[in-house]
Image 1 (cartoon, rainbow, N blue to C red):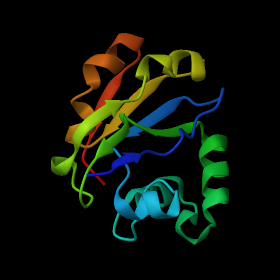
Image 2: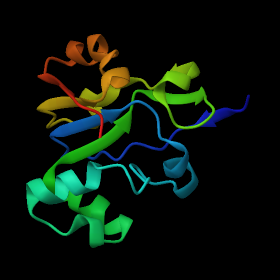
Image 3: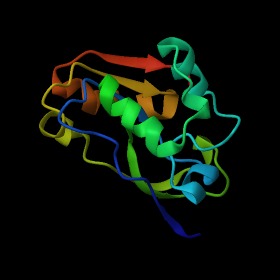
Length: 138
């Protein structure tokens, strides 16, 4: 099985909240876009919360909006082997260095784990001294 490489983080010095997924699904890897599958509700949920037409925006504009709103995206795994897109199929995972979030995001106020597989790594993010939340998987 081939080792898959994840996506680079979407973070900057103004990031206040980081949403951590587990590892990008096949559609996200193919398009090199976070939450790239049409059936994933991530962008629709943000659009409803922020009352912005995110789902109608080009991806680069979505990312720009995230930066403006202080929201960052990353995954707990940098690489893994997996057939399909299910978290349960992840094998030989190589974690991202989540301890760097504090220096990458000096204004960090909270971390939200998107789904149970991501939340399994909460023990690492809790060490950063900010609130850590478990979200249902989008």
